[in-house]
Amino acid sequence: METSSDFLSSVTENLAVVTFDAKTNITYASDLFAQTMGYSKEELLKMQHRDLCFSSFVNSASYTEFWKRLLAGQTFQDQVLRKGKGNKKVYLEANYFPLRDEAHNLTGVCKVCFDKTKSTSTLIKSIGEIGQITNTVHEIAYNTNILAVNTALQAVRSSVNSNGFSVVAKEMRKLSKDVDQSSKDIRETVQNILHQLNVIDQDAY
Image (cartoon, rainbow, N blue to C red; front, side):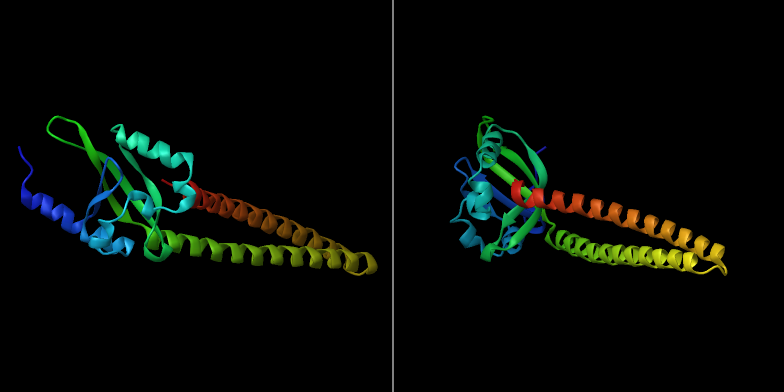
């Protein structure tokens, strides 16, 4: 059964779609894709795929391999970093697949994508806030440990209620240790997430 023109029209009107020929020239861009990248459709039709990527990716071996695979007919799906108008970072959930003619010869590549910039930026902001909270927790643990040491010294100096001082100091040291370990665990988690985001920034297709 042939795909109706109404269906194709609905897809291009409601999704961010862009197509490239075998030389990576942009041959079609939907309104939503143009809006996402910050360009007009007329501007996009004068551009190539490389114009929407940062130079660190374009000048890498990964870029050559990326297009080699696409032009060999392979599909690709992942979160990618792209360069919008004014060098704006645009994060996309991108799906690439080959375009073929009636003889099944590859004529180009189509990309359907979803803008993830807002959610990714919110994630980065939240991580920064978590990092600040972690530093505060670490400070609390440090100060608690200092207080525990002072309490222990006080216990040594005083013969009255020395056992009570010792118990308090012991419990405060334990609390400080637990809080500090939690702080370290959170920092490690945050660093791992930041590393993954950095990988997207530097190596994303």
